[in-house]
Image 1 (cartoon, protein in one colour):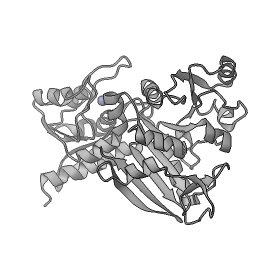
Image 2 (cartoon, rainbow, N blue to C red; image 1 turned 45 degrees about the horizontal axis):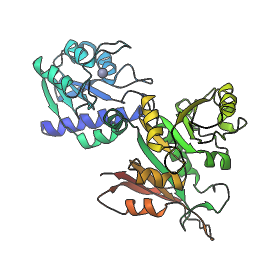
Image 3 (cartoon, rainbow, N blue to C red; image 1 turned 90 degrees about the vertical axis):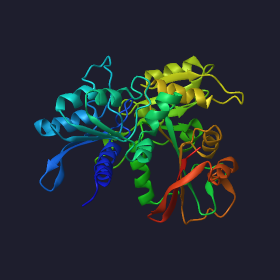
Image 4 (cartoon, protein in one colour; image 1 turned 180 degrees about the vertical axis):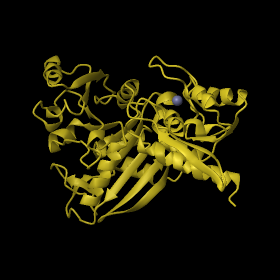
Length: 376
Ligand SMILES: [Zn+2]
């Protein structure tokens, strides 16, 4: 017979898997997974399960209770984040109230919600109503899943994943050329899947001018999950004829420019359906990345996927913003000196086990990949 802690971890793992399905779709809200169980003759059985829906509502708990109906009474709620305790302008019953109405006798929660409006209040309200509350079950996994939400409410910026592809000899492309098609089809599909689980894709104007990318998600079943496309474009050089701008009606394009970028260029882009925002320049004359990320957080973005190229990747990492770094390596060599994919500043940080840990590594088709997560 598995003991209760083992049972709790098993159902929490299910809740985490459910929550992960909604990543990239629920901003500005976290994607919460929830499972409701009740005792059966052979042990606990699942009577309801769900996750936060696109746009952020209904919350995961509401979905699970809806499915469980009266069967939730006397059962256990497993939830990947502390249930919300506050009413918002958008209305809806707070999940703490829903939990009380459903009549569960036990709540197992992975972690407290650092959102200052909740911050332990959800757990406390449940306890004061006489419900047994267990917290911290699989908390490490939950913290990682909710990293975007946590950073947004505690530091006012989204989580950033930086992804770079390189040749076997370490180059992102030839000197002065458009980016190479480095990745194999399997790795390409995986990148689309990663994109789909972020709220926004961010890249620099240099990459847009070189490659004219579309940056949507082109995987069957996930076409409607294309994140907002964000271009860091100091001087507003984004061509209105680019694929990004041409598709701005279907998938939003936000351009972040310097305060002194030409207003005529802004007018042209706005007429084409692009949203233009402005931030200050940093001391080096480029956009202030910290301010650009803050701006995205105020717009509700919690998870950013950066395919911005080696320079932006190094800058993000040196500033402490590259929370996750994915490096894929093709077996093909460029065979000449090109643009170094992992610049020295980023390489040094990735090699420091006090700063980054390898969360995952493996093979995608012909390519190898390493997924680093920032731990300090
Ligand atoms: Zn809620």
